[in-house]
Amino acid sequence: MRQFVSKIMVIARRDFRAILFSRSFLFFILGPLFPVVVAWMAGGIGASVQGAAGEARLGVAMGAADRALVEQARVSLGSAAQRLPGLEILQSDRTGEGEIRAMLADGPGERNVAAVLSGTLDDPVLSGPQGRIAGWRADVTLLIDEARRMRDMPAGAQGREWPAIALQPMAQPTRIDAVGGRIRTAQAGQTLLFLLTMLLAGMVLSNLVEEKANKIIEVLAAAVPMDAVFFGKLLAMLGVSFVGIFVWGSVAALALLAGGGGLSLLSAPAVGWPVFGLLGIAYFACAYLLLGSLFLSIGGLATTVREVQTLSMPVTMAQLLVFFLASYSLGHQGQPIEMAAAIFPFSSPFAMLARAAMQPEIWPHFAAIAWQGLWVFLIVRAGAALFRKTVMKSGPSQGRRGLGALLRQVRTRSFRQA
Image (cartoon, rainbow, N blue to C red):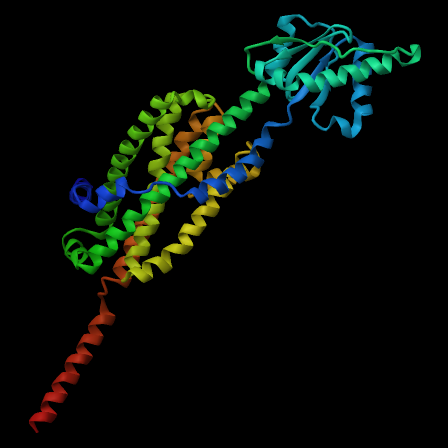
């Protein structure tokens, strides 16, 4: 086992140095990085996934009579109230700051309360995050005015004035905002992971095809087992990929600092930024090794660049579908579709990275990484066996063909001499 690992490291060091100090790698680093079309398609799915956070609703915590009037006013406005948020009638007259913060913190429960309307119809108070209540102020004003009209209708009140809504900003984020922010963080992580994997995994394929054309792979196969050659190439390409990510990440960090941005643009993931970053590195390695092992198997079967393009296209399209599956499962945490995306090895890195942003549990990630590593091992072994069988043609069948050719040559020479 020690000798096998040492052979893997020999191949890995050789490929790492050869690629890292080549001119083509320098141009690859400096070239265009990300396909815009994939990001646009991911954004389309992301818009539908945002619905998983639920509809932001307005909680009404007033007296029983005022609550009933507000609810009737919402129905009375009908189509004119299309911009009004959905109402959640809270059966509570306790409208202190502590009670309102509790309503905003848990929704309560699964109600997705994003702001609370309290006080009375004559002195209404709208409480919640600053941005939320500022955006809803005009709509709530219309709602309160309609409720007042219905209350004062029997008395024939005339000349009513628009109600003044008192705003009570609260810094504590609501549940709906927290879930929506984590979904955006999960989507950003998934998209970045997919683009980096697809951008860098192709180097494995091109490197193997080039060495096959130059007959280098045959020299390596004669000295080192093919399993060690494949594992060594994968590790070398993974190391080169980390070098590229470090360069791009440094440039991106400088650009964010110069523009005044940073991680504050995204909500903190459930596991925290340090753990999320470590899991992102681990899942990138797993996704890269899984896709790279497939590309190695394809490169072992292909003999020309045209064959490489023909054979790799289905894998690339399938990987795109896998990414969209993982993106769709983001909005269905804990449901069968999310579990299936986490179990399927090629979508597992994307689904589990999203889970790290949404759920605080750590132990499932250790199991997922071990599961993905097992599939990398199986795919590499299968690809090496297929390479030996189809490319390094040896065995009884080739021996019989060689003997028959030798007999034919002997007969031809005897006939010419005669």
